[in-house]
Structures are given as C-alpha cells and as structure tokens.
Image (cartoon, rainbow, N blue to C red; front, side):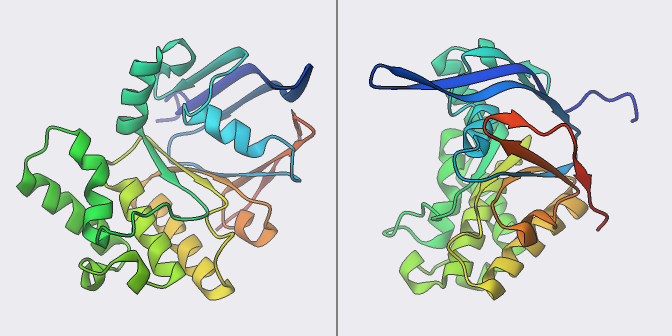
Length: 234
C-alpha cells in the first residue's frame, strides 16, 4: 500500500489567461501530489488561483505547460472528447450553488450522470437510492429543489457527485452559500465519505473552519504553491 502511486500527480504546471492584449499568469510551476483516499484543502485569497487549479485537476480547463496525471491517466494529453468522457467517469463535482435542475426531483437530479452510462433503469435506481441514503435524504427523493433547504440541496448535489463512484471528488466552496449549521452538516458528510468510503476529496475554500476538516491544507499565494503545508489530525 505504501508503494501505491499518488492518485493525483501534478508536475511543473503553468496556466495564464488573456485579458485584452495582456497575458495574466495565474499559476506558476505548481508541483505536488495527492494520495489515494486523502482529503486535501486548497486555500488562498481571492485571485490566488485555487479554483483554477481545481478546474485543471478536474479536466474542466487545460494547462499551458506541465502535466497532470489522475489515477494513472495523463489528462493533459487527452482530446476534448476523451476528456469529456474521462470527467463523466472519474470526477464528481460539488459547486457552491448546487447546480440542481429545478424541474427535476432530487432522485432525477442524482440520476443525471448515470444517464450517460450503459446501466439499466434498475441499476440506475439502485445507485441513486444508495447515494441518497448516503446523504440521509431517502425520504426527500421525490421532492423538487425548491422544496428543499439550502443544506438539503447541497446534499443532493453531493449524492449526484458520488453516484458514479468517481476517482476524485472536487468541491469548490461547497459551503459558501450555506448557514453555519448546514455548512457543518455538509463538511461532516464529506469527512464521512472520506473516512468510510475512502474517497479522495479536493476542497477549495477561503474558510479556515472548512479547511480544518481536511487532513492536509495547501496554500496558494499569487499563483505559487506555498512549500510549507499543514497537517490536521481528525
């Protein structure tokens, strides 16, 4: 087990964006690993590049230079079509604003990623029911997003993210739109997913309380990764 390669390997990563005639560097020479089953928080001030780094790891955006390997796959070498298929299979997404479809029930929202698979209707139902049980929402599966609290909607979003059993779970400010109690419930659920299911989680947050739930915190500052890192014991 000790010899198992990291689930995420990032090497000499660079990323910039064009604003008018100017090239604005966002990430510079980022190199680090994430181990399988690890819960890592990426912190930094607004504009530090933490969400950009998360999007690159998740295959939403493309690097300018460098390499990213996730689960043994060099995602920086995939075509757009290959990358889209890889994302659908290997990445679970949790966003700040839930991104639930209001005209679909909780069950139907969670089922959406499975519609891209070859699962039968029976298999899809079993997976969705299991995911909703995991987030303690079995009794709300027929409710629409508008009938759920913010915390419940985020838990539906988490169920949707894990229903495909992804290689990594990426979360971008998942508690940013929640009250303190709902935020704690969502973070505790993420800890449970990590501990009990061994899920690899990468969390972007500006909230130190949320970051302290992770096993390891890495800080970004003006596009550079701080060499020092803090370890928390949960």
